[in-house]
Every structure is written in C-alpha cells, then in structure tokens.
Length: 505
Ligand code: ADP
Image (tube, rainbow, N blue to C red; front, side):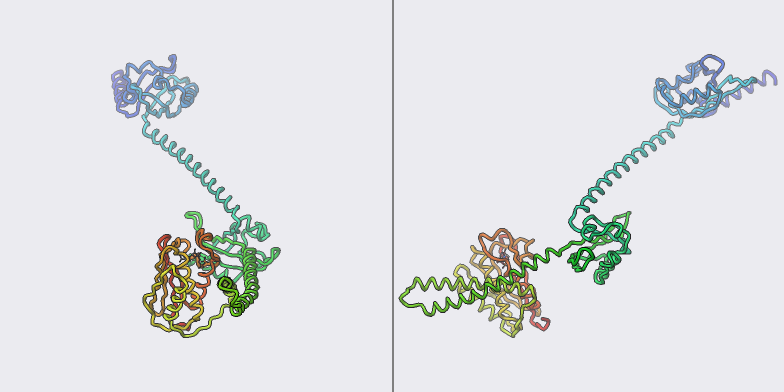
C-alpha cells in the first residue's frame, strides 16, 4: 500500500468514525494513567466537551465528583486484566447535567499480546435508564403498599376473628355443599365437640346426625338459589352430652368479592334457659291470678251483702266507704281478669263465642258507658258501618273499652276524643283518635307485646302493659288487624278492622 493510499484510508476511517452516533474514544494503555488519545464528534456531543479539552485526560473526568460507583470497579478490573466490559455508568455533561453512559470498553493488543490501546464506545442511555429506575421505584412503592395493605388486612382479620370468638352465640360457616368450613369457640363449647369432629364434615353428619333436621335442610337448601335468609328458625333437639336444647337459628348467604361466594353463615342462639324462665313466669302469673281470683270473688260477694244489709243508723259515711270498697274490688277484679286473659292466650285457651250483632250499636253503647264515667273528656262518634257482624261481642267491646280508656288515660290534658266508624271494602273499621302524648315510631309495634310500656311512664300512668296485647290477640283471632298511627306530642290514632265475612275464623 502506497503512503498516499494509506493516508486516504486513514482519513476515510476518521470520517466514518465521526459519522457514528455513538461516542468513540481510544486510550493509550502504554502511557501513564491511560489517557484518551482520540475521540470522535459524537463523543464531543455526548460529553459537551471539545476535543482539545478531552485529549490527554483519563476517562474519569466524565464522572466529576460522583466517584462512588460500583461500575467503576468493574471497569478498573477489566482494564487491569486487559478484558472487555460493558457498564452503565453515571457521567456528567460539561454543563453539569447527569447522563447515563452505556460504555463498552474493549482492549486492543499488540503482537506480544500486551494491551496497547482501549477502544471505548459510548451511548447516552439516560432515557432508558430513567425509565428503568422509574419502574424500579414504582415496583418498590407497590411492594410497600401491598405490604401495608396486607398488614392492615391482617389487623382487620384479627379484629374480626376476636369478635367472632368473643360473641356468645355459636357461629358456623358452611361451603355450598353444606360442609363445615369453620366454627367459633362458642360452638365448640356449647356442643362439646372438637374442631376435628366438625371441620370438613357435612352439617347433617355432625354429632350422629343431630343437625339432620328435614325442615332445616329445606330452608338451608333454599338459601343459595334464592338468596333468602333463614331467620328465627327454632330447633328443639336432644343432643348427646348436653341434653335437650331449644335454639334459634339465623342463616345467611355470604360472599366476599374475589375470594369466595356461596357460603352460608349460621348463627345459633341457645334459648333453652330463657324459654324455661319465661315458662315459669307465665306459670306463676297464671297460678297467682287464679289464686287471687277466688278470695276476691268472695270479698266482692261479701261487700254486696254488706251494701244490701247495712243498718240505716250507720249513716252516709259508712255507706260511702262501702261504695268505694266496691269500686276498688271491681278494679282489682278487672286487673286479675286481664292477667287471666294473658295466661289463657299463652296457653291457647281463649274461647270465642260468636254471634251476629249490630257493630255500630255496640260501639255507641260502649262509648256511652265510658262517657258516663268520665267528666274530663268528651268522646265524639262520627260515621257508621251499618253492618251486623259475626264476632264475640264481649271481646270486641273489651277491645273498644280498652282503646277508649287508653285514649283518656294518655291524653290527660286534651278533652277531645274522636271515634270514627266506617266500612272499608269487606271490613268494618273502628278508629279512636286522641290529642295526647303520642308514641315514638320505634314503639309502634312493641306496645302490642305483653308487659311492654313505652317510655318512663309508670309514675304518672300506672299500668301493666297488657291491655293492647290482649286487644291485638282478640282482633287477630277474629281475622282483623289492630294498629297505631302516632307521633310524640301529636296524639295517637288506634284503629282495628274486622272482616264482615268471618267464616275464616
Ligand atoms: P298500659 O296502659 O297498662 O300500659 P296497654 O297495653 O294498654 O297497657 O298500653 C301499652 C303502652 O302503650 C302504654 O304503656 C303506653 O305507653 C302506650 N299507649 C297505649 N295507648 C296509648 C295512647 N292512646 N297514647 C299514648 N300511648 C299509648
């Protein structure tokens, strides 16, 4: 090759190197500190330095003060061992901005195999590097969030588990095939079983088939397809080890999005003792009222004899005492009669003596009797039904009396009481409206329970809270309904309906 051709080739080579978009340098490994002896144009662009500021320097000037990079160690080892290497290293532009340099260093060896030069090819990979770093950062953030979320889930789970274990009700969770997935401690204690006897077993196989109850089976099998919960289902069963138990069951389908669906949660409340106490209380009331009734009937008879045979010389005072005694004996008699009614209702021994009677006439008579005994209130009757109904007249009159007495009693400062009579479809309807204290919404149903009295009224309005219970039962027995519409301070309207065609009952 002639000298000229060699020069031409060399300049072509330099031009080619300058055309590259990668920065290219050559360092002379034989000179002290391995200085750069050549750089192409792209290297000037990437670094921001000019060729005269580059030549003669060791590459490290590109790292400025940022010397503590583990990539440098890798690079140094490669140079020391005369090997090639590739690193992503943090470099700094002349104006101070950071860029990531993907640097490929490769040794050039002489005939004896000694490393005379290194060629370095560099690319600015800041964008890629930034994206990678961002990604890693996002990942770390995500991991942190997940771990926080897991922790908080765990805390809520522990919290829920402690509630489940603390409630004094037995809880049991079934899978869609009615196999037991979990039970709480209360279940294990109540039924004297272990988790081994229970978990994974079919509900109906538990404890020698003690839960294999046809009606329960039907209800549970209905929950999943229809989503209808089982509420207040009473089960009485003779259990091994623990004897006869009366329980109330509530069962619901439960679903936790993404985790499971079609599970059934059953809550079991043992009401054996409560029922027993209620039964004893009812027995006591029934016995006590029977026992009181007999001597009281005798006292009433004796008072009547005294009233008839009182000698005229004993005077007015004695007569009035006797009269008052009679009134109080009657009052006591009524109270005891009410208690007896309650126990008769409880035992299902209430007898209806139905006859055809004029409803409007009975209402007017009842109103007249009550009006005669009260001066404090004015009872106004409007409307009429014009119907003869078939019902137990004495019971219906008892209901009317009770509602009217309540209207008087609970509206002491309001004189007006209105009674409305009407025929609605094939029912007669009776309403009594007072302007009294009224009743809170949440008590509208409860006042028809026995012994329930709304609010703190005992001091001002003594009573036993059984009148409305008896009324409700009587109206129900006749196939009608009894209800109240009321707001506190705005008076109350009690109404009942009775069917005209009473064959049903
Ligand atoms: P008692 O009057 O002996 O309490 P009842 O069964 O007749 O028993 O009534 C139950 C409760 O209903 C009463 O205690 C009272 O709180 C409420 N109540 C009944 N009638 C009225 C009324 N007209 N106005 C306001 N409250 C009433």
